[in-house]
Image (cartoon, rainbow, N blue to C red):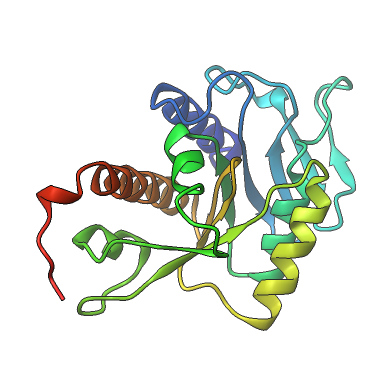
Length: 211
């Protein structure tokens, strides 16, 4: 019997909820059912106790294919998921979470990217270089989420990201991966890196110059 992908998403949401990454109704998760459709969390649902009826099945244009609950509305960030799936067809899962750390690190620079620390944990994002110089794409936040999605599309269509993740200033991080488990791992790794960055910024005297 095939496991319903919504069970995977629900388990991940509960996990993130208990980590403080999806408090209340914040954040959204999606995963492809077919190459042309994906389940996504409905808007306004508490992420600590999602049920199968708390998801909608959409096509890549955002049209509703299946809705177990007539009161469900697609997540406000649906357009970001659509953009990711269009830009990266190999992606089968897309996770967007809201953490205090993500918002804080997004304020450490006015640039359009955030330098990631060159530490072992980068391997969890697929970076296996010696002393890598990797940056995370950083986007401005807008009340209109489709405007954010347009910014993502415009930038990534001309320059591919260095890692399967992006940060929206004062909003949160989004990752994408070939499986729900890999997407969960990416979220945990990137949030670890955010905490590392913040601790480094708060305690510069603890670190020696490695250059």
